[in-house]
Image (cartoon, rainbow, N blue to C red; front, side, top):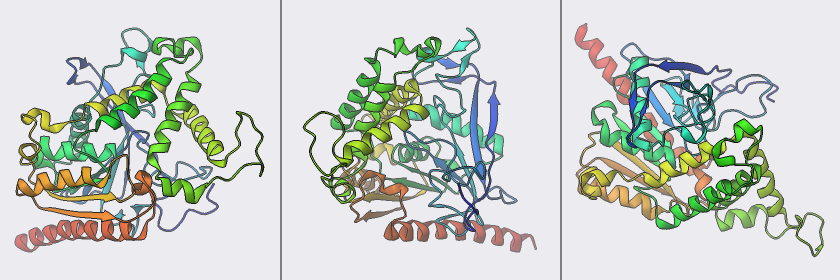
Length: 392
């Protein structure tokens, strides 16, 4: 736990919940009659609500992006590196919003929530979600908060896909779009990784067809395996080599199938922790949402046509060692934006950290990202000053 909250932290924060009674029509053809969205905010919304920034989370993320819920917290929110006073997303200048997506397991309505029609957890009956559905629900939250236009919508990995979808579906509602370590759609290899992870859950004896809540159990082993598979893809070969090499836990071989290498111990630990904190049905749902993402599909499979819809400015960033969403996938987005005549900046960060690099304090990345967000903040403040001078 923090003995003292750092000066550049947003400090102690409290999640908020908003209940929506207006039905939400979904891409799968079903309708969610009512739902809750849990979110956090950092900073202060300015007088004309022009300094708001939306943070879209990745697969295993949630609404707690920065700060601490209590002094007993062992670590801050998942993107505390970049969100806070004086940081990349400066809460002295921006009003930052981050929510837990529908279908999640950290407070927003999802498979582990109670289905009002049955009085039992939704489980596998919870509707299938898509990234487009998430964006539509985020628009409703923006309306509740009085935000008609975001200064920026930002996300890494799956969050970057949401940011991209925002720019296409609601071009008039954001000024900047920041897409980090993402892709315009998943490759066959990525879909394959997701399917292996899903099968590890679906075939776990404790899955019970997704109704494990009623059996007072959960597919622990399946979740552990799913996380192990996923985690391997988030790290590069160089990152694993530098972190673990071929180091042995006991310094010698035991000639058996128990944990011997440090990397084995690490993966099992990560899987165990994840299995205790993440819902299996949510994992299935979110990996499927990733698989379905393909905004060009609505534009006769033409990405350039899809990317002609946005009117905002873009920052796209990738990492050289990211093989889950390799730089060439980000360049597909950039090329589409350039050909569509959109304003786009692109940075390819040289780092051995792999896909998880977007979460880390990498100097070049933080510097470039920070410079862009400084420009965004200046635009917001100059716009306010211009209006005030005109009124004077």
